[in-house]
Amino acid sequence: MFSHRGNGHGTVVSVRITVLGCSGSVVGPDSAASGYLLRAPDTPPMVIDFGGGVLGALQRHLDPGSVHVLLSHLHADHCLDMPGLFVWRRYHPTPPKGKALLYGPSDTWSRLGAASSPYGGEIDDCSDIFDVHHWVDGEPVTFGTVTVVPRIVAHPTESYGMRFTDSTGASLAYSGDTGICDQLVELARGVDVFLCEASWTHSRIVRRTYICPAPKREGPRGGPASASSC
Image (tube, rainbow, N blue to C red; front, side, top):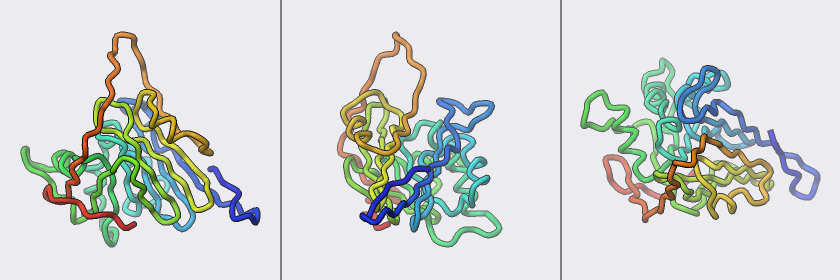
């Protein structure tokens, strides 16, 4: 939990971040892969990344049907449990009302749809359960009282770090998977909490930096995504 003293009246508003899993690359014996639950006053709960085991861990805290999902990138250890969340939202005996928001890289809809489809070469159209949107580098998105700013970071695939700021100024930066880069420094500068994932390194690994082209704003069935209003 972290907080920020704001409004000039000594008011303290708390933001809670819960580690659902932090095992890198694969699920560990005692931890799910990457997934972090963020809760703030007057704001719908958000799960940042949804790797293997996160769906089970999330059930210890709240109904998975109540969360919005923010994906940093589409490596399996950051999104593997998303097809399970599709099932939860569609087929639970008391399914959630309305759609959840899903933000991620430019090919989120097609990649997750392919993973969820029971048939090879087909895509499970998740537009019945999610409004899918795609990060635009540096473009803020607001959820309740929390504003999220995504920044493209250094990783072999399209990957984003994020900075979260609530209405009082309380702030959290999340690195996602990245090497050191200017965008990461900008995201983390001056925040109350920096959630920075770490990984194995090896001198023989060649550092690769993903250079982001203008992302395709892919919507349901590959059409353009509309601007979000959260």
